[in-house]
Image 1: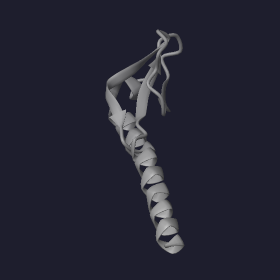
Image 2: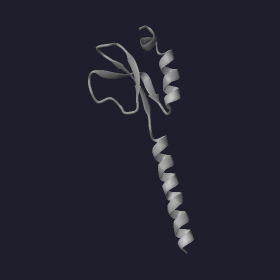
Image 3: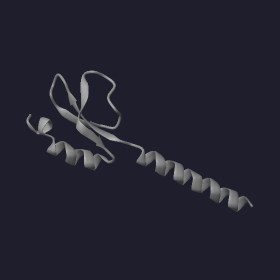
Image 4: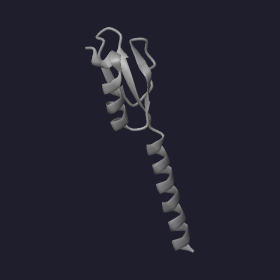
Length: 76
């Protein structure tokens, strides 16, 4: 019985941590004063940075690749 309870606990912890990792989004944002693009893992809440185009990605690698194709980010 203890083994079953332990296994269920471990399985739920693994599922919870996997869900938390996939829920992360990366945003390509542009600073309005410096005109530089960066990648952040939280949606900007200030008016000094804005999300570029459709700059929301599931992984950081996708965000880096996407940023390279965004005209506003490559013109600098």
